[in-house]
Length: 211
Image: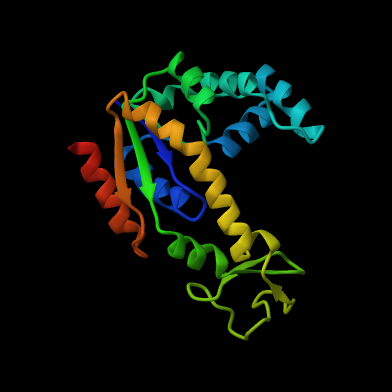
């Protein structure tokens, strides 16, 4: 059984690598956002409890999130294992998770700041239809103009370098104790996530899991 946590800053590529790994390993990729949406859609008791906080514009408390995780991990598709993405984010969440399941692999996606700045800082969005482009990886056909609707393309405030650096600092501050917690359990693997080729990174992670 492979019970996996993916840890990485925004721009590290968690979602991209998970989409490849879930096929390779035949286990579900469980992101916090998807988990919330599914529970709310199915109107489970915990989902309805979480919805109250979300509708009020508040953060969902850890105890409610843990109930949601517990509920999701008990589903039949998790019998062979799972990949958690976006949870736990803090040491208290990891300690709570430890009480309901055993994690045997924690993959830390190591990525340089300049790579994150290139990946996130190159994103541009249409003011009209919200379509996403990238100055390097997915440039529009005409500079500054959306291919889909002809709207103006702009850089969101949270994709500007100063905002990205601030998010990275917050991530490192929060993830330090979290990674140390799992290092003490001997389950941490570091993967180089700087490659622009997702398959290369996914293959490195597979090797780490088999080692």
